[in-house]
Amino acid sequence: MTLLFGIGAYLVFLLSIGAVAGRKVKTVEDYLVAKRRLPFFMAVPTIVATWFGAGSCMGVSGTVHRGSFYEVIADPFACSCGLVIAGLFFAARFRRTEKFTISDVLGKAYGKQVERFSSLLMLPFYVGTLASQMLALGVIFHIATGLDMQMGILIGSAIVVLYTMAGGMWAVSCTDFVQLALLIVGLTLLFTITWRSAPLQETLPQFWHEFSELKPQSLGLFPFLAFIGQLLMTGLGAIMGQDLIQRFFSCRTEKVAKWSTITAGGGYFALGLIPLFIGVAGRALYPHLSASDQLLPQLARDHLSTFTFSLFAAGLIAAIMSTADSYLLAGTAILTQNIFKTKNLKMMRASNLIIAAVSFTVAMFSKSIFNLMVHSGATLFVSIFVPTALALYGKKANNYPLAAWTSMLSGLVGWLGWLFLIKPHVLSFEEHLFAAATVGGIASLCGYYVPVVTRYTHSTLRIGISAAPKPRA
Image 1 (cartoon, rainbow, N blue to C red):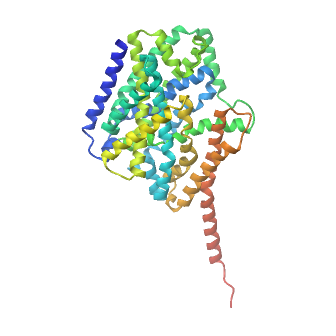
Image 2 (cartoon, rainbow, N blue to C red; image 1 turned 90 degrees about the horizontal axis):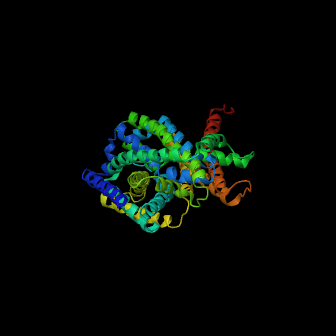
Image 3 (cartoon, rainbow, N blue to C red; image 1 turned 180 degrees about the horizontal axis):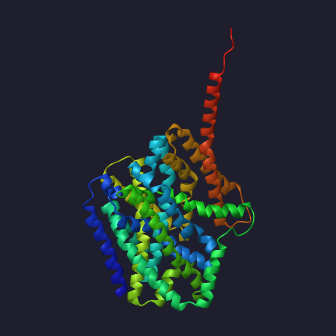
């Protein structure tokens, strides 16, 4: 009863935040970017909470429990590095544009057709990642309350949709601030219990040994491509996610955008070490656990009192919801600003329901939280990263809309071609997906510069011919 009351009170609290925040929402700028007024102390937690969700907690610990650190290079290692890179090179530049979405940036640089096509490429990522968070909510509610998985997914998703619909980015930022605090409390409690319960003489050496596994698993081109893919797909690709960039747009100043993102990268890595340790310790504590994604909630259920378990459950629910609301709002921004082209707040709120319904359907058919989260983002790296980065840094990017098209299409073709035509037997299915991302990224970069170099060569030759001395009559 105490557990149900605690979780129920927490969910009601989230809804109340959404209701209060909703009173301040009058314009598109209010709803999508919190009127561009987020201070540093609110920007940091909302950036961390954007990525630190089900995959970072349950997915990482479960994957390490049945595998190794090599399998989670993407998160937390590449993710934390990606945030630092984003802060150093991209956050301030995005904030300077005063836009609402990443597709707005692409549209300004390359034209409306590129804007719309990029939006269609990105939407599946937000549907897939939101589905992974819904799936995790179902697991937590099932273990904590005994509810059926589908019912848990439905209840948790409904809460996220309601407060996001009501208050937009301001509600999301306020709830992220509270939810990150709860998450830190929950993970700290579980880390303490794990430290006391696990055989440290085995766990600690194994934990440090795992860091030596952060390298290609064997020699050869294919393992190397898979290793690089894990680093790049989240370390660079996820930087171009609307969920993160929307935080840059919402920050009060360029300086706040830059330093809050760098700080968030350090905080993300520190938090990410806890699920890694729990995953290693879980091998000794639960050697026969078949559903590895349930390691964290199962460990808490067995070792925490009812009161402390309610704190942990609230913290884990907080982590998942804070990521879910970010992807829901990001998908809504792209759908309404770049596809439907509407400024109507009612349409924006209706779009929340559409995206949530599609994600709910996907969640019903997926079993792995971590893989669903990571691989749904492949299109961001293979098609979006190169043209966006060059739009921000290339002074003459608007002269090359063809380059953006060839970059996006080449990345897609390279990625899909590797997935369906190349079948290296030395790689697992997951490694094959990561290797495909590397190939797609290389193809995207080459695809961008082919028309640029061709145009430059043609112009140079034309100038040379026109400047050549003409024969005398």
